[in-house]
Each structure stands twice: as structure tokens, then as C-alpha cells.
Image (cartoon, rainbow, N blue to C red; front, side, top):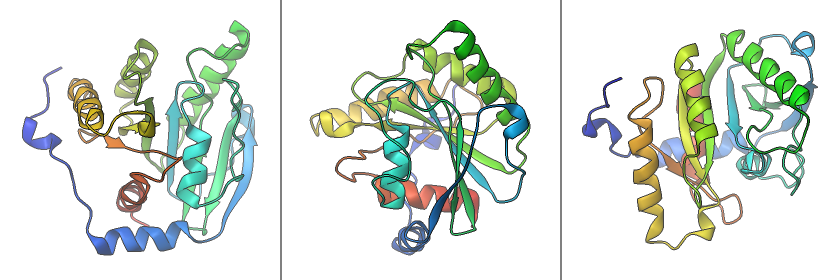
Length: 221
């Protein structure tokens, strides 16, 4: 698959107005709706959705909490594989945030991993309101083979996705642009990937306003 043009990877800067509109949206009420552990328990389709995927322990739940300014909306654990279902959060009756089970090194049985994979695949195939998947990559370690496999699956499913770097507060400031550039080089090789990679830190709030604005624009809410 051909690389995307370098011009396409230039950072898309959101205006102050977009950032403020997104801040107000994410400052609104946000409630846990349901956790689906099977295809049959997936909630009905209603609002636009954005979903968060990534390796176990990459920080998906922490990111959801940081976006909404809450500490305990999504349960956070130091143990990989804590999120074992597809969790849905209703943001101000305008947008659904979806936290997907982690992939990679979760210490669970093979059958459980296959169950999670089947559930995630069913979700991706059956959600016409899904606007974008945000694939979280640990900024300290870069794109791993399990991330590449997920990206290939998303390419095949023709689901739009975008890479987010997490835990960038562990990097030196000079290393963040290098990590972004490396991830963007990977994204250019994938047809369904958005070319711009966003660096974030749930701990310090770095990149969170920009990510809110990106979600606001993508979901058109």
C-alpha cells in the first residue's frame, strides 16, 4: 500500500474556538451506560461513537478519565487486562465514548483472549455510528507487532483510526517529536489510518485539549 504524501502528515491545528467548544462538551455530564461482555449485550445504536483501543495497560481508562475531567469514571488498574468488556460512556447525550478490551500481553487464558477479540470484531463490524477508533500506543515503547496487527485488521475492516501516544510525560521533551514522527511513519503505511499522531499524557494533561477538539471535530457533535 503506497505511503501517504508527507504534506498530509502536517499537524492539523485546531482553533481556539474548537478547543473551547470541545472543553465545554467534555465538561458536561458523562455517565457509564453499560459494559458488554458478549455480542448480544452490546447496546443499541443511538449517538455518534468514538472508541479507544490499545495494548493492555496502555492507559485507555486513564485517558477516558482525563478527557472527561473525572478520576473514577473508567476504572483504572495497574494489572494488564483489567478492561474485560466493551464499556460505553454517554457524554452529555451527544457522544458515546467506548473503551475496548486491551490486547497484547494480558495474563488471561487463550479462550478469554479469543472471546475479547470476537467481541471487539463484532463491535467494529456492527456500528455504523462509529466515527473513529483511537489506537493508543505507549510513547515510551512505540508501535509493537500487536499494534501493527490491530492496524491491519482495522485497514481490512475499513474503519478509520488515529494513533495516540500515551504516557509522554515519561519522555524527555526533545524525544516527544521523535516518537510522534516514528508513529506517523508507521501510519503512512496503513490505508485507514489518519496521518496525524497526537501525543498525550493523562497524568499532566498534555495534549488533552487538542484531543478533545479532534474528537469534537470527528464526531461532528
